[in-house]
Length: 277
Image (cartoon, rainbow, N blue to C red; front, side):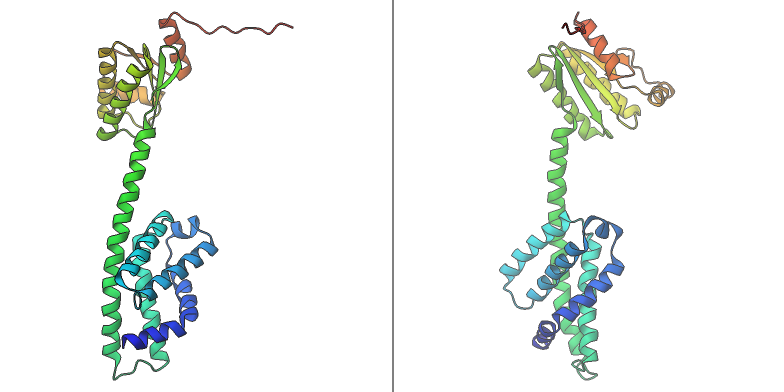
């Protein structure tokens, strides 16, 4: 029966592909259709179908290699795993119904055909789920490392003055990264004043404030002064309501005011020089 299924798919592949694309477009998550063009969707769908068909004829080594490549591609295209697994089942139903319509599957061989398709589909689905999950985890891990490296840079802006802009939520893991970058940067840049800019931090709760206070204490231990800037009115109100004590900080509501205060501490100032003709 496997050979019969293979022959049917090979001879009807374009018709099967057409039906598959029509059905899957109706089932597509909006994310799939938004991030890829029709041309990419069709070409990837064709590649997906070729991959499914190749499971009937390729060696395990060659098939697994193609499967890994395809998994990496669909992860990058943001195809949900549920969409991919549904695609396999839709494909098998199209084949089964098509073979019934052409009287290849009859009442006599109905169960045999069903079990043959099932025996072919289930291991492939399991393998795709495993590889997709592994690829996704690896991709997320690499992205997380990249984001961590970029998430808390200490930027020297003047001799002795550095700024650390913080953007997004701060959890315990990220707080450790901030602390490490802060201390390494202070020593490397020989910073005397460090401005921690929280303009881009959406929520400052007790835990976030605790991490910031710890960072400020660590900066003082290496001989630099820490200043907290970018305190918006709603953040200030939250800090007061939570009873968080930031008295050990010099605080400013904008980075500009913080920079002016930092230069004053360094006994420096910016002078505007008028151009002379």
